[in-house]
Image (cartoon, rainbow, N blue to C red; front, top):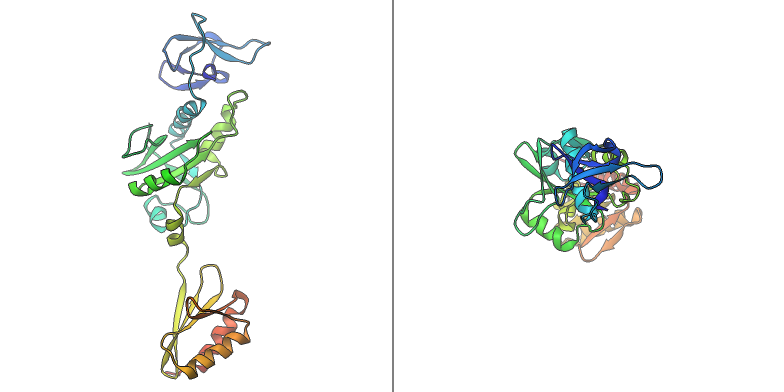
Length: 276
């Protein structure tokens, strides 16, 4: 694995396919610093070898991907990120809630300690930190997600598991890391996801002096609730809800009408509401 990548004289990580043949690659071992030879013969897969011909140093491929991702994002000046529903994240980083957005990053740090975690990369968009997890064999689990949430920082995971060391294509890996969005996701815990869903639309009408809440649910449908118990108003609301196949939710003490009947139910309730 370790012989697929090496560092050039400017400490830029290179895949062997990106370098000149032999010592002209001007590269050194990422682990021990010895000068490397780029071997690009016709019989074996191209690889780096130590000039001394010693046994290759061992380094985890996932660690190499962290370095490679840092390089290509830094050289691109940022990366494309998926759309995001979280309003604060969207506003702070100027991201779209509908389409992918180009996120400009002025600089990137690799594996810097933050509290109890060491993110793979930390990007800086102005004064805002964005944590980037480059996943190959290990992905963010619930325990690490909780630690990310405690930090209160935005985090993005890039799934690069398909880029194996044996057939690594730097151009395709760069495209996936920088421009693609299909292999990326924002790391947001379940409770935050619930908070970031679109807010509901609510109207209140008065029937016989009693408030009735008409609340459009985030995923479609209408919740109808009589705010204060009144047998006559309850009967009116029940009749209209059942007219449109509404179902009673005893836990919330309201009627739920499906989205396709939403406007009909609202119109009928408004028609019997107090005027003025």
